[in-house]
Amino acid sequence: MHVKSTLAVRGVATLALCLAVSLPAAAGEAKTTYPVDKESGLIMAPGWEMVNQQCNACHSSKLVAQNSGNREVWRGTLQWMIDTQGLWDLSETWEPVLKYLSTYYGDAEIDMTTFRRLPLSKDQLPPSRAALEGK
Ligand code: HEC
Image (cartoon, rainbow, N blue to C red):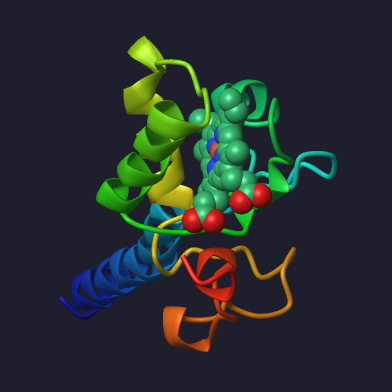
């Protein structure tokens, strides 16, 4: 009886240890950190090649990495480039590009290994060029 209960206790202890070890590991999987590509400044997470290929043509991809927003903010930014700056229709890459941007450059996902501080909020920004030109 004594031996049996010791084994039972050991069994429970082992189970608890397994849980303690595996839980943080599982939590870690959900928050995988990806390296940052030195050249483009982009987080090398799934979908980054699509952004690297399409978002370097007119400006540096570092401009991408400096911005953040949820899916709607990114959709609006891209749509503005399509409507006014000659960006092509992203067709089948819309979804993966939006997913990548809103996941890795979401509101709270600024890569602080590349940038020293969070971007300024709108009310802290210098006046826009249009405002300075009195438009
Ligand atoms: C056809 C040209 C072109 C391509 C390709 C392009 N952009 Fe832009 N983008 C622009 C221009 C022009 C601006 C304004 C640049 C400036 O203000 O100096 C801009 C600005 C931006 C900004 C800053 C917006 C802001 O609020 O200041 C972000 C972010 C951005 N682009 C992301 C992207 C992403 C992501 C892609 C790839 C899907 C992309 N761009 C591809 C032309 C382009």
